[in-house]
Image 1 (tube, rainbow, N blue to C red):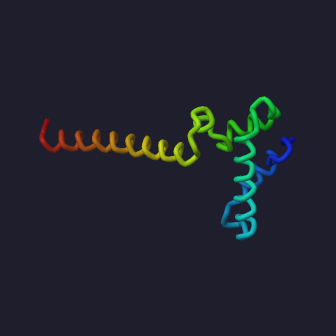
Image 2 (cartoon, rainbow, N blue to C red):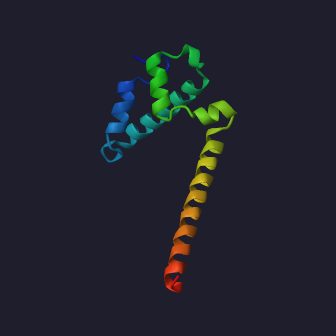
Image 3 (tube, one colour):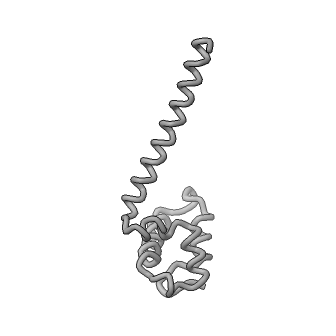
Length: 108
């Protein structure tokens, strides 16, 4: 059971379970539009007014960004922060690999 104006759990699972390669352009567009509508509805609906099922669905499926919601960040800002964090992590790992290669080729 989903809250009024929200996408049901079975619909969400069905959308995710069907590969995009098996969906028509209309199905993909409909899924995208309904998912975006659900994201907006989940963001503006107060937590206290959500059913237990909707709270669980939102918290486990990226339909609301707790980080964005708690800090007032937009989804774009949250995505940018995530991308920056990934770049930093990859950069750090590459430095470690470069140091190991340098050590192994210098005979240390």
